[in-house]
Amino acid sequence: MLSIGVDIGGTKVAAGVVDLEGRVLRRLTRATPSKDARAVEDAICDVVAELGSSHQVAAVGIGAAGWVDNDQALVRFSPHLAWRNEPLKQRLQQRITLPTIVDNDANAAAWAEFRFGAGRDARVMVMVTLGTGIGGALVINGSLFRGRYGMAGEFGHMTVVPDGHWCPCGNRGCWEQYASGNGLVRDAIAVLETEVPQAEGLLDHVLDRNPHNLRGPDVTAAAMAGNPVAIELIGDVGTWLGRGLANLAAALDPDLFVIGGGVSSAGEMLVEPARAAFSRTLTGRGFRPEAHIALARFRNDAGLIGAADLARVSIIEPPGSQRGFWPRRRRPRRQRRTLRELVGATTSMRS
Image 1: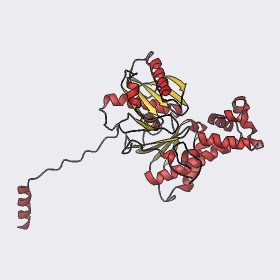
Image 2 (image 1 turned 135 degrees about the vertical axis):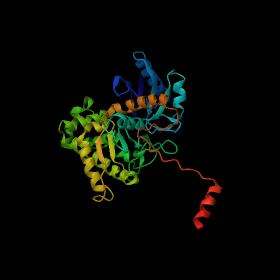
Image 3 (image 1 turned 90 degrees about the vertical axis):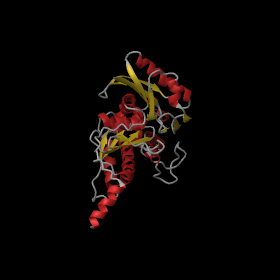
Image 4 (image 1 turned 30 degrees about the horizontal axis):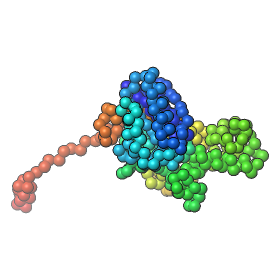
């Protein structure tokens, strides 16, 4: 059974046809028209139609960069897109004839890593996706934890610097302002504006050598080419990442953190500083097991793979059922006793 997964981020729509083993058979990418909700719908429908024309698919899963309610129908808010109480599922179902589900993009990415990737053996897995912002998700004993209102996992909007940088969510000092693609680009531009000599090599990787064209992948490319300022900038993001993970460990006590999203393409240049900062900052360090920090297996494909698999599972299992894969322990059924039997047992004990 094939299904289509669509991952809607702050800058692009990525879609693919996915099989039962999590393999992407075909993929498409479109730019995200972030300021126009109807244009985002058009982009989704276009990629679904194109992919569906070449493969026989059974369902469509949408991973949306926003806060999706527990009915998996309404996108209540998106910091980076034009969604405000958007009935996305209803609108798409008017144009897509296949069964369609909507979920948070980080939930979808976490599901892919739990089902097929780096988190297959984890009991408590925290997914952190570093892209335009920071997304997050939690898989506990084989089930996505969504919270009471479907908004669990918005780790990127924890305040880490009181009165710090403004965030699109409306608050200041959010974690994603220091450990995301946006934060990386902001700091890189600031370095270029100071005309630090070591930063000149950064511009070799930027379109027209124009600082205003700088993007996160440009900084990563410069770091991989050995530019010392780019390496330091990636390391700073990693340090902020590790501090935030230590806070999450204090609250959630996971056995595994999986790091995905576009910024994770920096690999160990990002993760090694994160591990070091995590170990330095972890509460009770030295007296507790430390969670493992691993890179996502599927990187940028995780969201679309997870969305496709969630859509497939929603056809097999009834809506509202938890999609867990860990066997549940059955408790022995307790024998119920009548009041007369209980009274008789008590009387015989006294005698």
